[in-house]
Each structure stands twice: as structure tokens, then as C-alpha cells.
Image (tube, rainbow, N blue to C red; front, side, top):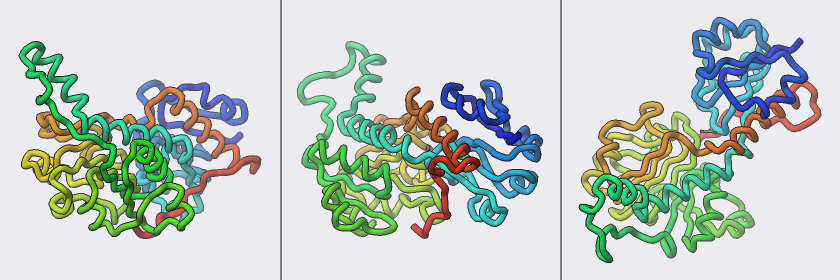
Length: 323
Ligand code: GLV
């Protein structure tokens, strides 16, 4: 019987169909460690991995029976794709279920950073009646009439453009390739160079995959090109931003604020970020709703079942063309 290894703990209702058809191994609530998976993998035909679980050469070399890696995420920077291809291992992801919740969180971070929602909430709780309030205090900036620059115009970038249109924003974008005219008209977006996007945008949102080319896409130089009133949003992957350069820029007022759902050095922000009022931070919750979690699990099942039974589409991943 086909053997499936799931590395992470997840609501089981998302996996019902898989369990009915195959021999599925789930971990306890801690999930399987890399070392445990390395030990177990030779037995398995399918690996269901989480976005931060490394599927590397070492693991694939031990995976004698492995035919499919079904990643629970849209991003797949945790997987050595060229090596998987070399080994004849198919890789699949879950793009559709991730789009709306991630775009919603990007918008939430934009509004929060612009209107200082979390900052005011925090200060009101901590300072109580000592917090200065009044019509000229705690001024934020609006989003209506402002310009949003979206870096990466895939599904999530496009979903964010729609939301920004609804808020009355102008939308610029930069992408590996320009959208066709019909799509640009539909999303009301203007294609510009990366540099022009940085210079013209009041808000910059990163919605690009993490690759060698997008590592530190935003560093000291790029931050200097941005408006001193600009707000930077990252719901993609932490290493797209040089976090130390961002901390310096936020401290020195090179840009106004940032909203971050991901961090350069793993799950947690650099401690210096915690001391800054002009940054809103969330712990990678882009898809963290119960409904999305279950939908993503079902998408993983569809990829596995579609792969073996050819009765539904498989969201196959291919190496990214150069950014
Ligand atoms: C989450 O980070 C994803 O890639 O889906």
C-alpha cells in the first residue's frame, strides 16, 4: 500500500480522503523533527511537508521510494527543486487556498501600520490614563489616494491589488514579467521598474517568492530610495529584507513604518524590532485561520490523490524563472 508521511500536526478533517485511501503516518502535536523524518523516509512514497521543513539532498538521497513531495504552502523555498527534478520526484504546492488570506493580512498590516492601530492599543493598555490623547495626537496616514507598489504580481499580488483598488489606492507593480494589457486593465495596475516603484510608492508590499535573486531585495540602498513617509509590508519571506538595514531605517526615519509577518532569522523578529513603535509584527499568520488550514490540507490531499489516480489536477511546481 502507498505510504504517506505527514511531518506536521494538522486538523484531521482535512486529511479524511487521504486516510481512507492510503497508509498515512501522522506525528503527535510536536510534528516530526528533521532527524526523525530522515530516519523514516526510506519507507515512504509521499512526503507531506510544511513550508519550513527542509527537503534537501541529504533527505532525498535516503528517500528510495519517494515519488511526491506535497508541500503545505504556496512557497517552496524549503525544497531543493532542481535536485527533486533530477531524482524524478514531483513537487506540488497549495497556491489557491493561500491567496485571499495572505492578501487580507497584507492589507491589515498596511492599515495597521498606517493608522498605528496596534501601537495605540499597546500604549493605551500600558500607559492607561498617562497616554496623551487628543485630536492632534497619534496621527497616522491614510491609504486612500496613496500609491501602493506591489513587488511580485502573482496570485497574492493581484489579490492585494484588488483590495487596494477598493481602498481607493493607485497601484504600481514590478514583476518578473509584465502582465498582459487585459490583466493590467482589470487590476488597474501600472508596470514600473523596481527602482521607480521604490521611489513613487507610499506603501511597498513584498509578494515575491524567496529565491537567490530575491535575497535582500530590500537593503540599505533600496530603503534609501523609498520615500521617508513610506510604509514597507512583508508577508512573503523574511530574507527578502535585510532586517538589520530595516531596523536602522526605522530608527533613523529613512522610512516611516513597516508591517512584517515574516523575519529574516527564523520564526522570531530581531530583538531590536520589539523596541520600535513604528513596526507591526505578526508571527507568520498569513494563512492562520481554521478554515484556510483545513482547505490547505484538502489541497495537499488533492495533490496526492491526483498524482496517483489522475482524477484531479495536481499543482505541480516548476523551478522559478529568474526574478
Ligand atoms: C506560507 O508561507 C506559504 O508559503 O504558503
